[in-house]
Length: 260
Length: 232
Image (cartoon, rainbow over all chains, first blue to last red; front, side, top):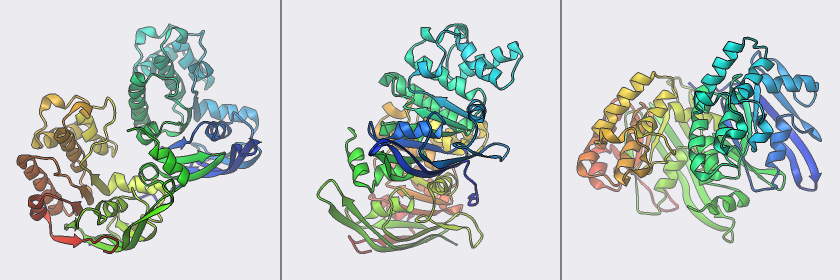
């Protein structure tokens, strides 16, 4: 049975933010469904990170509209809601995984504290429960339980990135934004991290919008791709179709540049 | 019951970065496949067999024409891949359209048995049942048990291909697209694949395949669909 009448959870209409001519992003429109994984690809300076920041409320837009339908089917207009409501959305239904763990973690409080903080932000108060749940989440991102009281600064890059994932997923968000999630990791750690991410996304059915310049990562994680160049989306569609049969000259160049 | 109906399918590859060279591959290709039928795309190298098969999976984007896929028994439960959204194609592939190529796209670190189980698991079937079915298929395809928990990246070409075949046959897809599934297999394993195809056919699957190996081709084919370059 196909769900032909399914409604998207996120509707992005004509969103723009320009710093200079063709710098930033302009006229971006797309829809995202529950559990769908969308990759934004393109080279440095194409506007992919700007777009992600706009969509996740980290940056104000020049124009356009982002509509989000929450779990209770309430409609939110991201650019029109009070900052306090945006923050609430980011604590509850959304998550943000930053490229640099230091932007997403508090480096001087314990790993358990980093995870527990998000639970406390949604009203969890029982210390024992919070600690127990933090430990459970550490296990599901393959961090040893006995590191729960260590600070992230004592972790390797790969461990920090996994801790960021745990911190975001603990409140069971419906939509997670990730900027170059594998960007700072060594190649040997990347594969492990990608596999974990892929498994969690399938298990939890969380929708993800992520930015990457690595088409291999895009193929592994994304259902669908947006290809950006000079602030515009030049092509979008099914991941394997974009990578195996690219239509736009720029996408063809991007795909043919991969070293196999 | 007609499961696949492709009409007037044309496809030209335009290589923008190589002086805009145009490679016409499909010109008004048409194909109709019924449930329980196995059709072989036949023709010399370059006649567009693979392009056509990939188009039926939504992997290649056609320039014109229509590819209607049936996903349910009701008369209106058909969708044209040309008009389908990526979301719908993903769903179609989870439920209706299976594709087995000769190459396994390996996911780092994921064990062979998990690779095989994944399509069935993501449908919500219990782990136990998925494991049993995967183990049964791997055994049938002579993949030794000591390899099941290892990631297939280090397997031989033939072993990887058999893992891929097991993954393709773990679901009873109503439509199966096969791109040379017996390409590098020995006779024993080819026979197993032929059996699996016969079984799928008996369960009512509509099958479209490319087989260079004439033995396997003759064993499974109900009819040959001959393709000529640029004209089908």
